[in-house]
Amino acid sequence: MLIDVAKHAEKIIQELRKWDKVNIITHIDADGIAAGAIAKRAMEREGIESSIHFVKYLDREVIEEAKGMDGLIWFTDLGSGSISKLHEMNYIITDHHMPDIEGKIHTWRHFNPHLYGRDGGREISGAGLVYLIASKMNEGNKDMVDLAIVGASGDLQDSFSCRLEGWNQAIVREGIMENKIEVKKDIRLFGRQTKPIHKILQYADDPILPGLTGREGACLSFLNSLGIDIKKGKNWKRWIDLDSWEKKKIISALIKLLLSKGFGHSYASRLIGEVYELENEEEGAELRDTKEYATLLNSTARYGHADVGLQICMGKRGETIKKAKKLLRNHRKNLVEGLKLVKEEGIQEHGFIQYFHAGENIRDTIIGIVTGMLLHSKHVRDGTPLIGFAEKENGDVKASARAPSLLQQKGIDLSKAMQKAASRLGGTGGGHETAAGATIPKGKEEDFLYMLEQEIKNQLTL
Image 1 (tube, rainbow, N blue to C red):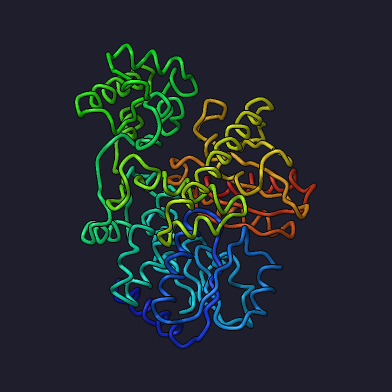
Image 2 (spheres, helix red, strand yellow; image 1 turned 120 degrees about the vertical axis):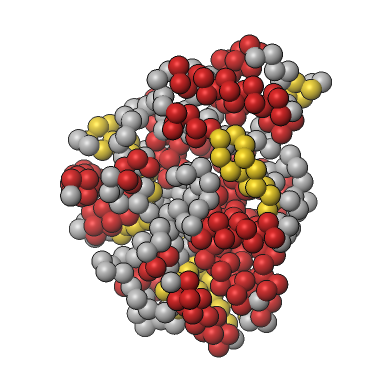
């Protein structure tokens, strides 16, 4: 199998080297930005002229525009979901999403882990696939291994087993050898590098901390009850500022809290896992932790500033980081407002699934993030898929679906379900087994929910 993968990668490398111009088309999320950056730098080092284009979706308009470009089209972190529409085009695809046709697409132009029986939602990201190509093309490209891990972290590929797995593990090992990545066993809550300790508890969602999540005052009281000094002078302490004894004391108390509230050991154990830090980045900065790095990237391209995220991935710092931090503050504000809106208006039941419709009040570019954040909250019925709707600028509706990982073990595949339901309405869909998206005509949401629920029921009862 690995020999086949190596041969496949070599065939794509040979194709890339045939062209004088390569047009990189990539997604606007953290994984897509990282993937595009690796591809762009790899082409520069080969002396191949390249351009990069960031897109929300690979829709008909983008495909038609791509067909008119001179040179080879390289789709990174997208393309598999639209492969049947890419005829009459010179292209290659490095994508980890499910293909759009049953039976999978066996063509050397399509580099996808699903073709090798590997789970693209857990075992490798779009950035990881581009890195496999780039590092095989030129040993010097191994200096971009950190971006491959940022891409995987941005896609939450560690969420299933609390560590990166599959092909990602090989990339992590390479990152360690290149002195780029440091792996630690630590608390998995977001914001270890930059946020005050009580804030990482307040915003915890995997796992949810009963009585603490969403309650700032309760988090402060909890830490005080443990005798944790939460300030150093006038500044709030961050997780990285604590000594090992303080960390162990907090983790032990959190595990006891979860167990006392009836959560099992497997749920409580999600507090601890592998975290990935970039050794060449400043400790305490947003770029040190791969998840915080990914969040910074998400705050750029999702708001029309992909160039800022790309520049960061290409090594720019200083003023570029200041711009990104400003965008990050706006991103966080939008997420908070989006969560508040849904919590106030409520989540609706639709048989086995749940949904909310944000209309124009939540950007279609972040509806998936909001849906994912809500999935594990107290506002959502446990163990049930959640669908979020938001209106796009062109009048269509974006649907984002998220399902708990437990349902993956029972056979759920949101990518196929969303794809089938959307296509019956003249739309498109795809993604991963527990995280997928679709675009459908406005006014067809009720029909979509009905068909989606039937697809999911069929999957879970087979």
